[in-house]
Length: 232
Image (tube, rainbow, N blue to C red):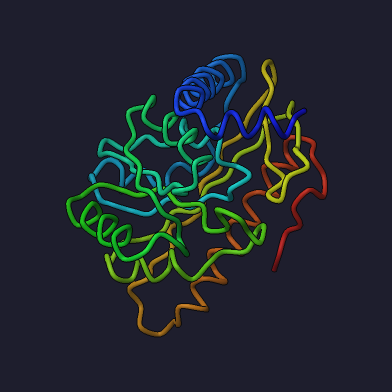
C-alpha cells in the first residue's frame, strides 16, 4: 500500500509541487518553534558580508534545516538530484527563494557542472550534499572538491541537530526535527582548495572529517549520542 502511494507521488508533478510547498512550511514551523543557537557563524560571516561565492556542504541526512542556515546576501543554488524525487526538494528550495540545479556531486553530466561554474563565477553560491544522492552515507565524494578547484572557491562545512527529532530508517539516516525543542546549527572552518600542496583526496578527507565532527558535536549537544562518531 505504501509503495503504491509512493509511486503515485513520484508520477504526479502536482503532488510533488504540493509536497515541496508543505516541506517548506514545515521548515518554517520548526524554525519558529525551536530555540536556535548558531555556532561558529564567524567562519562564513566574512564571505557572506563580502558577497564572496562559496560551496556550502552538508550531509544528505541533514538537508532539511539548511534552508535556514544560509545568511548570505548573494543567492544560493542547491544542487539537487535530477531524479523525480528531487523535484520535491527543488520545489521547497524555490519556496525559500533559492535556485536549484539538476544533477549531483557525482552525476548529472557536463551541463550541470557548466551551470555550477557559471553561477559561482557570477558571484552566487552553491549548496551540495557530498554524500548524495544515494550514498554511501557520510562519505564525501571527490566531485565537490573538483568543482571547488575549477571555480577557485572555498568550501563551507555545516551541520545541524535538534533536541527533539526522528532519525529515519533510510540510507542517509535522514533527520526530521520536531517542534518545541532546541536546535543547533554549527559551521566549520572554510576549506581552502587553492593550495597546491594538498591533493584532491586529501581535501576530500578534510571535508569528510569536518562534516563528521560537526554532526557528532551538534548531535551530542542535543542529546543524540553516538549517532555519528567523531574522527581524529
